[in-house]
Image (tube, rainbow, N blue to C red; front, side, top):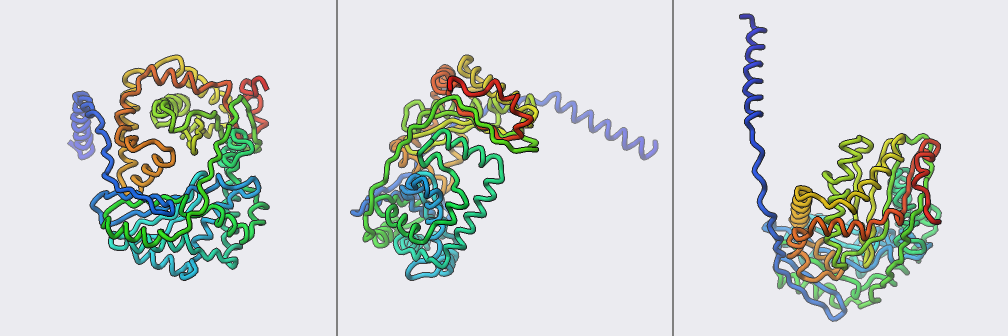
Length: 462
C-alpha cells in the first residue's frame, strides 16, 4: 500500500471513530439551580458632616478598593453647561494645594494603583484600587484630591482640548449621534437629554466656571465612601474619620426627576453613503424602586438584552440583518427607559424595524416557554454573581442599591426574585410597559435609501 493510500485509510478510520463518538455522545447534564448570592458582612457609619461610609471585607487578595461616590454630576448642569461636570472631574486630577499632579499620580502608583475620576449623569467618583497596607494612605490622598483641589488655570486649555477631541470622535460615529438625538427627544429641557455639548460650548468654559461648579456641588453631604477588599477595619475607619471628618457639609443632593416624553416620533438623521443604519428606539419605563422592575429585567433579557434573546435570534441569527443588536433598561435616579439599539444593513432598515416591533408584539401576546424562562433566569443569575465577584463589582452593586434606595436585602434576595418571575408576568409586563405607539425612534443612515422604508413607522397622532 502506498503512503498516500495508507494516509487516506488512517484518516477514514479516525473519522469513523469521531463520527461514531458524535453519534453516541449524549447531551450534557442540566445545571443545578442557581445559588443565591450572599452579601458580605458590611460595616456602615455616618460622620457628623453627613458623609456616609460602607466598608465590606471581601476576598483574599491583599488589595482594597476605595471609592468616594458623590451625588453630583451632569444632573447639576444647566443647558449651557453640558460636560462642565466632566471638565471639573478632569481638573481634579491636576494636583492639590500641597501636591502636584505628578506627585498625586506617583503616590498612587507607589500604592500599586492609580487614581480614577469621572462624572456620570447622577454621580461623580474618585476611586483607587491599592495594596492592602496602603489603604489608609489612599483614603487620605483621595480626601486631599476632593477637599483641596488646585484647579489650575494653566492646565485648563489642555484639558478642554482633550474633551473637545473626545467630542469630535463621538460626533463622527453614528451610535453617539443616535443616542444624543434620542435623549434630546425623550428628555427635552432636562439634563438627561443633554449628552453632548457643542465644541463652542466647551471652548467657552473658564476656570471660574470650573471653580464655581465645584463649590456649588462638591461637599461632604453628597459623599458616600465605599471600601471593599482586605483591610484593617479599625485603621480604615480612623483614616476616613481623620481625613474626611472636618470637610464642610456643603449642599444637599439636588433632586431633579424628569418627565420624559412618551409618544411615537420618528427622527431620521441623514448620513449620506452610509452602508448601515443605526437604529435606537424605546420609551420611558419604571425605575429600579418599582416592584415590577426585576420582572422588567427578565422581560428585557428575554426580548433583546441577551445574546440568546428573541430580537437577537430574529434579526441576527435568522435573518442576518445585524451583528450585535441589544436592548437595555437604562436607569437614572427615579427614572428609566427601555431601548433597543441595532446597526443594520441599509437595505433592510425598514425590515429590521418590522421584526423588532413583531417581537415586541409577540412577547406581549405569547408567554415565553418554560425552556426560555429557565434559560434566561439562569443566565441572569449567573451574570449577577459575576458582577459581584470583585472588589469593584461589590462597590458598584452597593452604590446602585444606595442610589436607588432599594434596601439591604435587595442583593441577597435578587436571585430568588429572578427565579420567582413567571412567564405570565413577562407577558403582562411587556403588554403594560412596551407600548409600540409610544416609542421614540431615531435612525441614522443614508436618507435617500431608507426614507421610503421608514414610511410605515412615521409619527402617529402628531
